[in-house]
Length: 95
Image (cartoon, rainbow, N blue to C red):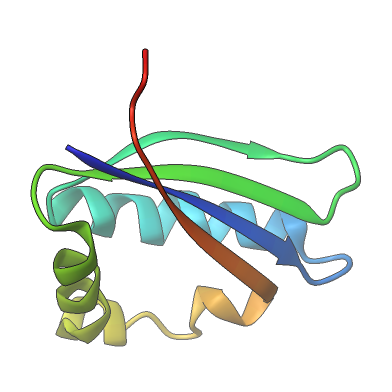
């Protein structure tokens, strides 16, 4: 299993909309494509959102397939419009 930490700065005032769209559109689609959502957290600053994504296989390749899929491209409006900045970091389980 490969894991990735995703750290987002959400646009000011858009956290509730982001979380709603993420829960109702991104999570089910990710799960349908074989991804595991390990967990997600929002910061008390109301701008930070972090989540851990897992995949049993090559996560980078699966992620490319996910973003290129017709299902993902049909998400309109695109939930990513709420994200001001994002970082992705690969993780290795140590415990």
